[in-house]
Image (cartoon, rainbow, N blue to C red):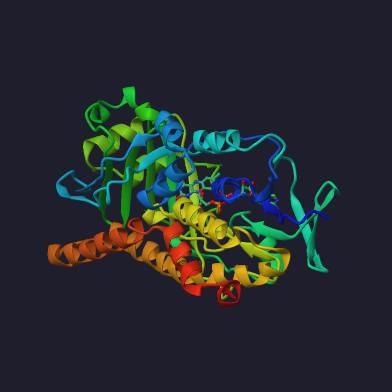
Length: 398
Ligand SMILES: Cc1cc2nc3c(=O)[nH]c(=O)nc-3n(C[C@H](O)[C@H](O)[C@H](O)COP(=O)(O)OP(=O)(O)OC[C@H]3O[C@@H](n4cnc5c(N)ncnc54)[C@H](O)[C@@H]3O)c2cc1C
């Protein structure tokens, strides 16, 4: 049996694929197993904020991201009638952030994997931990063994269940309509550069930003609901119902809705932080570990931070070191991600507030800007390296 650790990542989403790249960059042997038989096009944008951009830069992905992304030039906050509230959440610390089309970013990450290390059509159905190894069984009957399993398999994680954990989704009482529109169809989008715009109004908000090098505008419209809408990213939505939600709003909002060919409904569900993430040989990252509501746009960034943290902690590890290293990983990540889960919830409430009292709005806005500064200024890799240095030796890491 080879001395090098064999690491299996379950889930080839943003979290799983970036973790694989980060781990390999530190000399680790990684294979990714993804349930999908092929990459499907999902019409959605996603933010790569500076705390994630910094890490991706270190593994040499920035030039490729530039070819697909739109540079984020900050966020304009407006009232529902278009009055400017603030140009908030400016890009921090000199690291550029990008807004990308999810499918284009996933393709970029998949293309960056060495041949033979990403196995599609492998849906994990169960795991068995014995004698310091884990056996993975896939839905089509194939089995593989690994020294360590990382569950990057999203909100309905099988690895989470196999670790003995369970999360309980509770509706936020809102749903989102989403869609992509060619920028050329929108008169208001001609001069926005890389700016994101969020309109805030009675119990709902409306967010637009460019992706695909500015060729497309990504729209996300959060509205109240008392329906148990599907926790899906692909359920079709009704354009007329969407238009009715925003009657009387600022012209760019109406123009954007009018230019949509189709929209998707997305029920927004929240989950409490998990008490722990790991067994001796299995752990979680990304949405499987800390699913969060989307209002801070940190879902992908936190998954990326997890992968880079694991890479630092696992570098040079032997089989017997794995349980201690996983506990160290959990200690470094659980508190920060739990805090961000809470901040994401609070941010959603701020965005959907009805502000008769402008002072109250500005107080909440200042709180949100402080939170985003703390989140975006973080260097997960450096934090992990400092923890290793502080620990001094392997015993202390454990
Ligand atoms: C289709 C889609 C659209 C999204 N849109 C948005 C958005 O608009 N805004 C936002 O903030 N966040 C969005 N998210 C969530 C965001 O992408 C995540 O928060 C972030 O990228 C972290 O992702 P992750 O890799 O942990 O999980 P995910 O992105 O969910 O990836 C999990 C991966 O695991 C695979 N998988 C699941 N179960 C198994 C199994 N049993 N065996 C093998 N593989 C398995 C899935 O097919 C998927 O590829 C979306 C996620 C998805 C899947």
